[in-house]
Image (cartoon, rainbow, N blue to C red; front, side, top):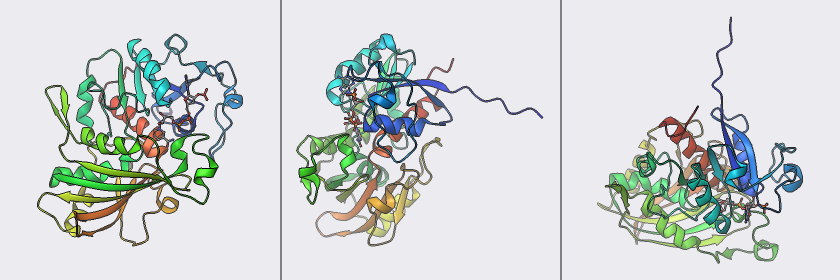
Length: 347
Ligand SMILES: NC(=O)c1ccc[n+]([C@@H]2O[C@H](COP(=O)([O-])OP(=O)(O)OC[C@H]3O[C@@H](n4cnc5c(N)ncnc54)[C@H](OP(=O)(O)O)[C@@H]3O)[C@@H](O)[C@H]2O)c1
């Protein structure tokens, strides 16, 4: 009996391979059914070094690709057409544009181009139609949302579709790994909580409106509801928890909201997308980062405490793994959708 023919995997490169999200990419792409890591790229500080020397392994898993030589983030040094980016925002501005202009498909975690009108801000289970923005483009950038937006926007998506969201207020409890390595100072984080000094609150206020927006005549018409966000870093390793109060048209009961969330089914079956994507917990002490961040191999969103809010109508907690669902895993799922839709060259 002959063994079934293996489909050759598609070579990909990782820009920013030496960072926290870069290492998650390596971990998640190891034995991936569609993609194979061919090239690792980072800054001039790392280029030319063995990966193991440039980037001491910081995850719990076995170190990978330790002897691979890191290359510069230069399109001339990278052959793979598909390029995952885990670059710092400042570096991403010029480097991602250079790769796009050289004809690469850049699938990015960085915030540099998320709100650009021609760039899909994609959650494959929520707004796959937004990929129409890049159909036919030779090179393109596709982004995934901020890691704090993810649990919020996935919970809002079915509710917006069923009822229409009118307003949201929320507060985050964000893990330290969300700030990369070395991230926040020990002084700020040990025995403390730390109101986010960056532009996280603006991202949480704006990105869901683009993701839940409507594709009209080649542009995204943003969803009209306001979001007021407060973002706080807490001494947790992985997993961003968000507490949200939501005003919905028609003022549905918490039971109706739970039923709506339970009915949500993602439109495509993708290798990295768990089923169900949204997990409802009935326990009053959940979700928590320790118990729920790794749900669905770190790709599920856990929602709990869906209750009546006397001010906004309904309130809930939602949680996602920031570095998997909120970063590398989300980008890989985006690439899987591009592959499914025939938007990645396979030959
Ligand atoms: N951590 C998370 O949970 C999370 C979640 C969602 C999105 N993100 C986003 O993902 C990106 C990476 O985050 P991270 O946490 O992995 O950060 P990080 O640990 O600080 O890693 C940054 C990476 O960017 C590279 N880099 C920095 N400046 C560069 C330059 N001028 N040229 C080329 N490469 C350069 C670094 O290379 P060297 O090592 O050579 O300096 C490193 O590989 C950021 O844009 C972040 O906002 C992170």
